[in-house]
Length: 153
Length: 153
Image (cartoon, rainbow over all chains, first blue to last red; front, side):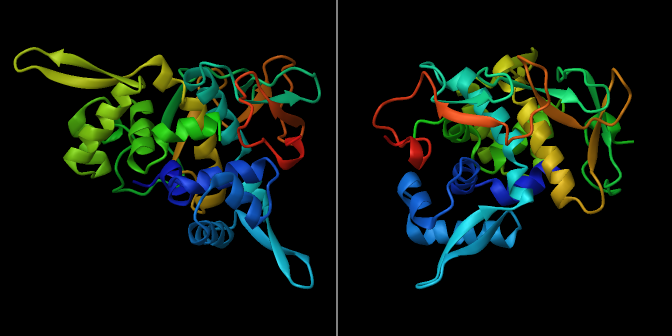
């Protein structure tokens, strides 16, 4: 199926990669830090970081000359995943964290613990999820699995 | 690490489950429809749907009596994943869909193709991602991996 969710999951859809991205969004940049925090095998971590660099979500940048050492920085493409992670975290906090949120963010501008919601960039109205209609977009290719059965014709 | 993103990925973090949820959010409810659209093996699909029911994201409801047939409906817990999927889809549309979005949603209230952004529910200001400060929340457990190295003390 021609779908941006599926395309995104091609990059992110295995267990370690989203956790690496989560840590990177929290400011982690160095191999040893990722490794200690995640407890992932070094070869798996190296492979996942290489894949993120290759797909354009991270770049590998030297931070020391002798010996040369690199850190992994999110590119704009990688950083722009923060809203997805914010909404996933809020969902987990609500449904899977009976003891309360393990981590929270404070909105610097207003000082409150951040609870984000989606709004429409055109009319600035908050979105509810039921107030939207799905349709094929410009990137749709005839012959693809139709969006929903009713759109098949 | 005590983290709601990780907890959420325990449920969603393998390839088929997010695609089942994506289709469910688009209105798909029946086993045969999921199976045809995803091209997934029947035993894998059955196992994944059972897991979603077990974790409370879906419920299995009879829609026909003789013979009894069931469909899979999202619970409120499952439906509330739509903002995560919306933001992931927008990210994929921007970075991974050079031919344009395969699927788009129209915001019924204003008639525009929906481009969502996050806003703070307290002050209604749009969020930028850099205007937030992470900290340990009420569900934090002493001894867990600290949020960021600077918070270790």
